[in-house]
Amino acid sequence: MHLTIINGIPNDDFKNYENALEEVRKSLEKEHKVDFFTVRNMDISYCCGCFSCWLKTPGLCVFNDDMNGILKSMAATDYILYISPVSAGFVTSVTKKVMDRFIPNALPYIKVYDGECHHPKRYDNNVKLGIVVLDEGNVDSEAVQLIFQSFERLGKNMHANKLFKAVAKENDMEVIFNEISNC
Image: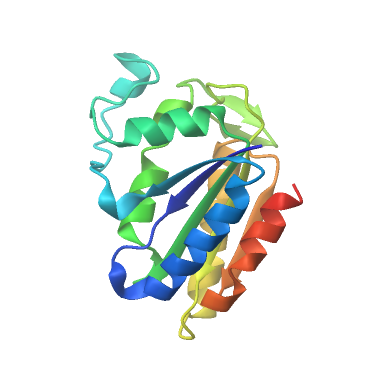
């Protein structure tokens, strides 16, 4: 299985989580192809909403930055897993930036999908989607529900055939390995 993991931890304040994620990554790489992206260390611009990725350069963003590697991975992957702490009641800005820049992997047309109008996916992979919200003991349940609802919508837009949602403390990171390994 091919996994794309988006590490949306914005700074070094979550060192214990980073260490746990590295252990999970090593375990996953024994059995799977893993593309692991630590977004805070990448040069990724914010989406400007120009729709050039649909109209002028289909499938390619006008920004020639590190997001291109993530988009290529997403186009070929079986499982996209976002990992983010809560910041101001939502996922971190670096996580949201990657969510927003997904648009080149969709087509500009509208079709009915699951009773709603959505853009068809550009690539034929049957992707699964996951979100792990990191909890240092102060995560608001309303924020978690908002994040989960946003990922339910993202999952529909990506035509994901499964959505995994979890809240994890640093010593719960093994849940990620177990969930992904059982897919």
